Amino acid sequence: MFTGIIEDIGKVFKIKKSGDKLFYISTRINSKKLKIGSSISCNGVCLTIIKKGKKKKNNWFAITASKETLSKSNLSLMKRESLINLETSLRVGDEISGHLVFGHIDIKTKLISKKYEGSSMILKIKLPFELKSFIAPKGSIAINGVSLTVNDVSSNSFEVNIIPHTLKNTTFNQIGNNELLNLEIDMLARYVSNYVNINKL
Image 1: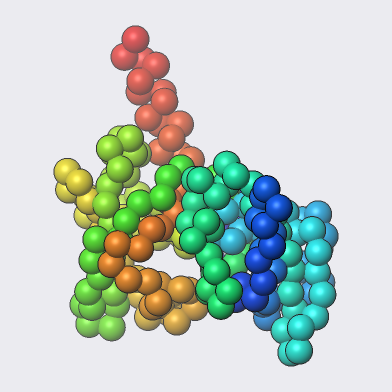
Image 2 (image 1 turned 60 degrees about the vertical axis):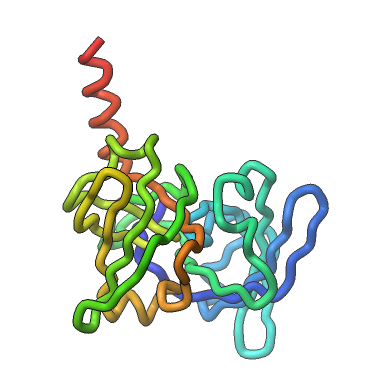
């Protein structure tokens, strides 16, 4: 489980394919937090660290992404030198500054546009039909692993605001229009929607 507060922007430096894809990612995250067998969020996808080591000044770790994971997320588009949002898993007693993020991507969807308002950036994102009942103004959502608040929702899109601190510490500065983003809806919204639908029966 995660909070959606990114610890580092990692860089993919090697990819091996053998059915699944094996990604090698360099990071400034402390080696003690990169435990083999532990979970790590990579662009919001919960994956397992299977190898680790040191590369020049940075640490590195390796994760395997299955065919299912690649089909549901933008990890399928990663290549050498790609940047990726990283967060290690929560420990008992850790502060929850964002919201509870499980690392189970619901869908990947397109960035429609981005614009600056003052020093912040507004992202307008395509709203998938199947997620309409889960996304509401002032609700939480994880995008590429980042915990964000929904500003506005229309019939086919929604908007989020990216403050300067988040811009500096995530990959949002590098994304472009039509780029695919990983979405995970808030678990609370999922349970509320499920409860409402059950009571309609």
